Image 1 (cartoon, rainbow, N blue to C red):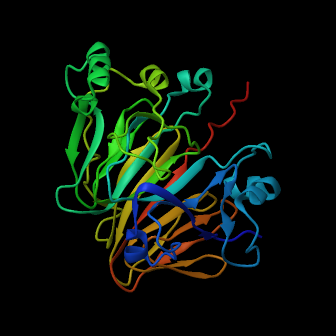
Image 2 (cartoon, rainbow, N blue to C red):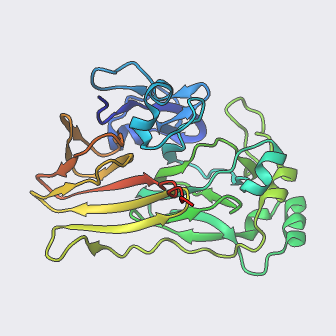
Length: 333
């Protein structure tokens, strides 16, 4: 029988990365390297998450899908199908490139994959900001002119952020992460990024990183102006409860909710649903087939075959809960 899975993180060195994942979450980063990404749940070619706990430790997420797909996801999936999500923690000590991911209508003809994602701001230094969408009245012609004269960053909508903020980024929305941010990223299983501008800096090899101007121009939604942050209004899950929730994303691809849970509280998860839980703050005890103690920066995958799982705390805590959209039921004629 399957059980809640934790995985060994996959660390990615990035020119804009740093060491905050070690300081904030105690992650065992490789020494003396700027680590920009920790891939927490991944089923990418060459980057498949390896199980860290329980009797299946050492097996990986690809093996789980090939051997136990319906138990894991709760619906039938071809064995060769990839796990539908990619979960990361990002550490941006410098600004990331101005970039875009191709929408579904363009991805195949450009040789890429669509990528809709969500950012949750876990830590922000004073003055931190995001770039998301275009400023009002920016046109494609004006954007291309700014590309030619090196001032295309002027076309991007800039948003000051702090810890607890969230931004939804559908495929086609131009964006970048500013400096001084640690972000939990929930996204489609894709690694296609088209760079628009990279601040004229060199990559880790000392050479400028390539830009993808033709692909970017084909992918950008030029009607996407000045999107806002996700509303941060919490609601109690029932009257008088110490547990409050907020929906961050309600998309056909995935649903993300943030929970705040009070001291000495217990919260039952939905049965028979594949869910991923990521701890923001505090310490959680996850009870299912056995007890898992979860700390900030840890993610756990709860398979759909479990009929019962609950969370409890001794002190206040907060976490993200990620679920896939369930397939629509087949209509009988």
